[in-house]
Length: 360
Image (tube, rainbow, N blue to C red; front, side, top):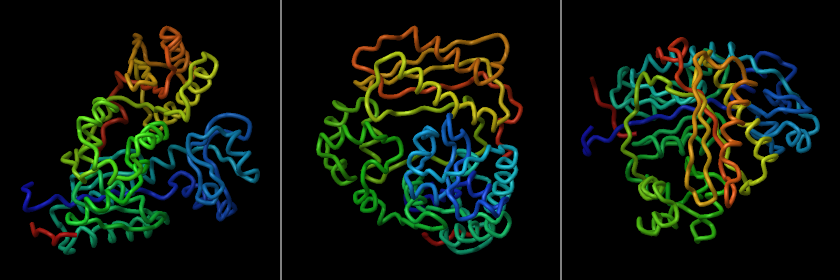
C-alpha cells in the first residue's frame, strides 16, 4: 500500500462478549451484574458484564475480590462451545467484506477494508454495516475503531464503548494519540504506567516529547514501539489466516512480587486464564513455557516439553510451578508472570478463517 493510499483498518471488538452471550440467552441475567468463570469462593473472573464493571469488577480479577466489590455478583459457568459458535457467525460476516481478517481472540479482530467490495463508499460505512449485521444476526453489540493502522484502530474501538464507533482519519491520528493517557496504550500495564508517571510521562504528548535514546535507557527494546506509537505510527499489516503457534496468558502486577507463596498464587491465576483459552481453542500441546519479567524489565523464559500433550490445567500448572521454582529467588522481584502452551496440534487452531473507498 503506497503512502498516497493509506490502509483502511477496522478493529471490531464485541462488547463484554461472554457475559453478553449469557445475558442474551438467559433473560433473568439481563440488567444484572454477571461474571463468567470462577465461583464466589475461588478462581478468577473470565469476563464481566457492564453492570458488574460499574462496581470495578474486571476480567482476570480473583473471584473473592470481585465479590467484595459487588456482593450481588452472579457467577455463571463459561460455555466456550457457545462462544465459539457465535464467534464463527461473526467471522462469517467479516468474510463478506474482506479476506484480510486477523483474529485476536473469539471476540475481536482486525479487518483491512482498503478494497470496498460492496461499494459502500468509506471504511466508516463498512464498519457501521458490519455492526448492524452483527446485531441483527446475533443479538449482540460490537464496537469498532476505524483508522489507517492497527494501533490506532484498536485504541479507537475502545473510545465509545459499548455499542460505539470511533473514526480516526490519517490527519488526526497523531493528535488523537497525543491526547490519550499512556496507560491506554496496548502493552502499557499498571507497573509500566507508574514507571512512566515517575518520569513525567502521562499522555501520548509527553511520550512523544521524549527522545528514543531516553526511552531506550528506561524501557530497553520496548522503546522503539513506544516511540512510534506516540507518533501514531504502526506499519504492521493485517495478517490474514493467522495460525496460533502458542496459547497462553500473562499478568502484570501492581507491585513487584518476591515470595514463593505469592508467586504461586499468581501463577495459578495465570494458568487458569491460559487454560480457559486452551479449552476454548480445543487445543492440545506438549510444551509449557514460563515467562518472568524482572523489576528491571529484563525477561526470562524457560520451557519444558513432554512426549504427550499436557492433559489438564493441573498438569499445566504443575509444570509451570516447577519452572518457576527453578528460578527463585529473583533479586528485585518479579513484575510479570506468563504461561503458554505450544507445540500445538493442528486441530481447531487454524483460522478458517475493485473500487477504492474514500478516506474514512
